[in-house]
Each structure stands twice: as C-alpha cells, then as structure tokens.
Picture 1 (cartoon, rainbow, N blue to C red):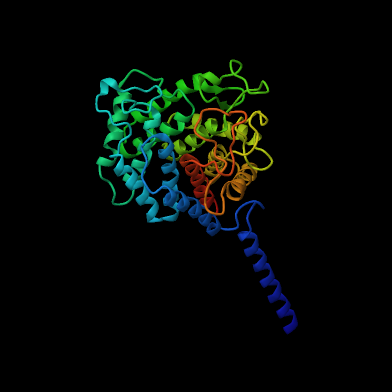
Picture 2: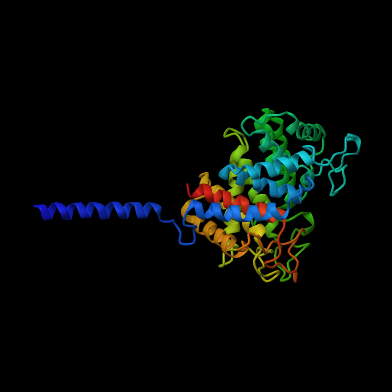
Length: 383
C-alpha cells in the first residue's frame, strides 16, 4: 500500500513538472526564453543609443521616430531614464515640430525648414509629446498645445492630399487617434479617413495588398531591377506599424474600424509571404535580388506589427507567431550587437538601392526606435 501511494505521489509530481514545463516553454523554438531576456536586449540597445547620443536632437522624423519606440520601452520597463530622455528632447524643441508661426506660409510638400509645419515629418514628434502628456500626473496643456494648433488648422483647410508618401502614414495616422483620445474631437477620426483615402488612391496596390513608397514608384511606371513591382520594406513597415498604432487607440465603434482591421490583416498576409528564411525582409520585398541581404528597420516594424496583431487578437497566433519569432530572432541575434548597437539599418532614403552597403555598422535613430517597438511588443507577448 505504501509503495502504491509513493508511486502515485511520484506520478503527480511528474505530471505537475510536465504541466509547469509545458506552460513555461516558449511556443516556438526561436522565441526568447523569458521576459528578462527580452528586457536585457531592449535595455542593451536603448542604453547604447542614449549614452552615445546624449544631446537631444531636432524634432524632425528621423529622431522623432526613435522616441515613439523609446516611449514604448518606457511603458514596459518603467525605466525613468527613458522618460527623462524623451522629456528633455521635447523641452529642447519647445514641444513643437517646425516652429513657424505664420500660418499663411505653412507648407506640406517635402521640406526641412521651419515653414513646413504641415509636412508629416514635422508632425510625428507630437505623438511622443502626447504620450508624455498622458503619463500619470503629467497633464500640462503646453505639451499638446502646438499639436492641437497645427492639426486643427490643417483640418480647417479643404485639402485632403497631406499624406502623399508611405512614411507619412506612420508619422501622422497615429497622431490623429492620439489627439482624439485626449480631446474627444471626432473630426480627427473623420480626417484620418479622408487623408488615408487619398493616400490609398495613389500608393496602394489592390492586387499585392502593399503600399508603394509614393506615386513615383507605382508599377509599371517604375520596376525593380528584375522587372518586378518594387515595394520598399521600410515604407511598408511604416504603414503596417502605423495601422497597429491607429487600431490601438481607435474606438471600437468607429465606422471605419473594420476597414482598417481588414487592411492590417491583408498586409500581414502579403508581408509574411515575403519574409526570407533567415527571418529578415529584403529592401525590395518582392525582388530579393534587387538589393539582397538583411535590413533591420523594415524587419523591426514588421515584427512589431505581427506581435501587436497577435497580442491584440487581430492576427492568428498559429499562423503568424512563426513569422514574428523568426523576425525577432534576426533582430536580437543578428541586428543587435554585443555592445548594444543595432546594425543593418538602411540609411535615410526612400527606396531600395542596388549596391548600397548596409552592414553591421549601419545604424540610425529610427532603426533603434523600430527595434524598441518590436522588443516592447515581444515583452508583452511573453506575459
């Protein structure tokens, strides 16, 4: 009798061990082993960037895109150094983008000067200002005053062609939902749809379910090196990540929510098909030989989008977790260097360039920001 009881107890212990092991074991062999591992990767990349770039930069898109990732890193780690880094940047830029005060001179074609206030690359900074405003005990209206002034003026104009390049959909789409969230003004959601409708009319390929970078690159007027449609990975990464951020804040009852969700799912399917066996995406998504080799910024935005979609129930875990796991494995094992540098980031540009060198030393602010987005979402996945 004692022997039977001991055997039964052993079986229970064995079963308990199996259950705990099964629960703790990652669902895919390429996934990180723990949240701690992801936190270490995130902290290594962000600490390296902040210590090697101690002075706040301008409020233009390349630096501002980093801060969208830094704020997500802050949300999951609660590392006050991260918040302080973005706060110092916002203060240095006076919580503004382009700083012209003469509305009669405000422009929205490409421009890096202070009168291009309506150009989306000068508006992405407002996303981080709003995130800082929304922190507990931090609601100071000065943080969002310029964002409201600029966007309310823009919405008062009859123009709807503000978003004429793919990057702009990441720069400004999430700003519209963030501003709705803090003001309750439904015009932000209406204009989001109006501006996006225009963007879709000039950049979206109905057949491939992907976005060209802008109207210059639409097939067959423009072709890849091997005569194919040329979809730039970072460009579609901007859009895919932008939709994730929009859906995060968009009301459940918004009349266009189902449309945006379907666009997100359609893009996910198209993007997944273009992933390389090593986990990354090449710069020209459907023509890998146009500009072969790994590229981190597009891969990071895609990985973030897949993980966000899985975490929020919009993408099927069984179908898309392998894609996200391979993407993150590339980011954490190839792109992330032992010292914390995030490499293989294509420099500032607007297309996949044959022969352009992108290597372990290629890093940028926006590339690090994209990495932080993906790492933050992986951290959430492992909850």
